Image (tube, rainbow, N blue to C red; front, side, top):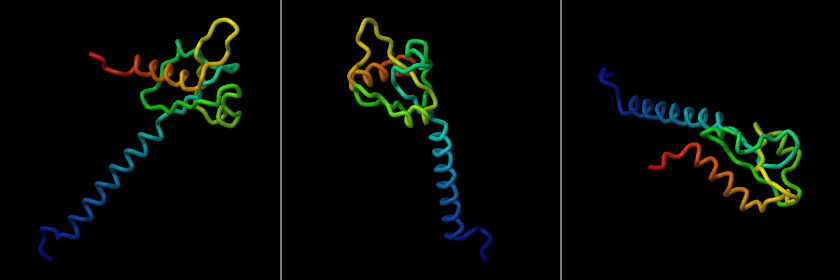
Length: 110
């Protein structure tokens, strides 16, 4: 042995560093919250909700909304406040409104 480490030792160190980086990324993703966007009893109004920096916004189909399973799996359920008799927003429009709310809370706009 040469005492200075071999190419094999260097490759092992590189692989361990990669593994550490992947594990850190997995922990980061696991910390993300699933936010269901639906106007259902118990949901929090979007205007009073602090969106987490790392989150996945989940939208349902126009009309039926999200399934019970999707709502149960979500960390939080949030709705977009509406007035009058309209209780449904097109899913694309709802996504745009929710994403803008996230941006307003987290983006550094100079």
